Length: 294
Image (cartoon, rainbow, N blue to C red; front, side):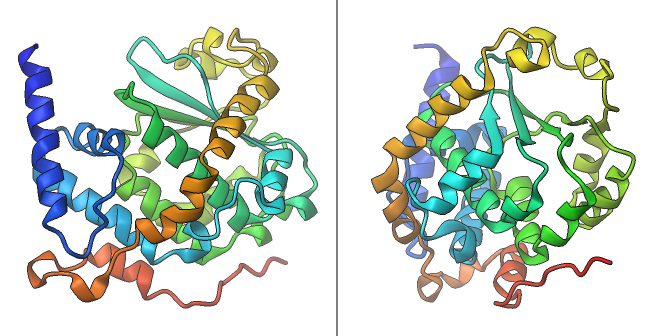
């Protein structure tokens, strides 16, 4: 067995042992997920521990996103009808995973922001607990062709804040690039809403691409993209159908994970005080604060 693999397995044993000694954290955690925490933290045990604690604490403080997650529910099915949230099949030469996110319809009356975020993280959970091949980085591509100014009043600021904190600080991934394609002239208004929640290093990664431009291909090989985007990865509907089926196959897991993965704050040891970022999520008002848009 190569030395690197032996070291990796040793780290996995250590992180499992540490987790079992944390009375406030869940202990029934998928091994694949633990490996991702180690890899995304550069195999720094302390960083992995902090990320794991924040991961579960944010989830426990965000029931509107991480509870009542039924893949068969009408709300989740509707999200998949009007959006594409798709991990693409092939990775880049740098071993980066590429994702495509888009609205299929410009009709904002059909869109529910909270349901979309919930579904987004259900798909992420499917990947993070089942895919053994851990990429060295991730690259999301947001197609904003069907995003209009009517999208702005749909945004729930409380959920947006939790989404941004969780995805940037708690998910065991390494973000490498962010692309926004088919960006309309008013994309700056939407970006301005997200900017306060963006880490400086993430904000610097974002590249905007105008409609009908080919600038994306300077960073992403065209052949990795779906057929609809001039690539060779297959059609969007087939790729999405594959992931929807995988998510639905985990229905029992989803229906129980909010309880199995709950944090018991009353059992948290004094030495493991909650991350201030997690407390800021817990202390948000219970009622959602939506933007008023003129």
